[in-house]
Length: 60
Image (cartoon, rainbow, N blue to C red; front, top):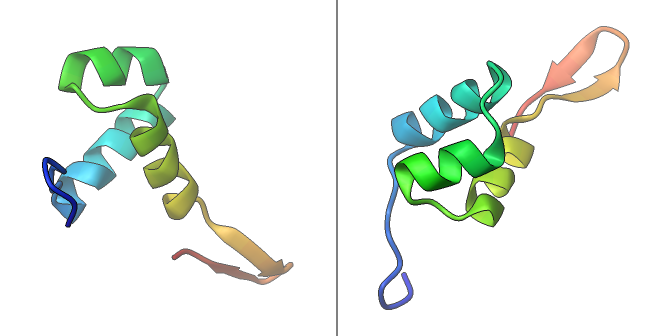
């Protein structure tokens, strides 16, 4: 881990993504929790399901 880099638990990341999905903006989450917008955006992209075919969806 880089010097000064914070570690966030998987549970915390999921909570932030859920808050975003429930309607909170990146700006609100960033200012409320002190996390950069790009970090939150990365978590959102990783949590987004990927449709392989019409019956199969996966998440990372």
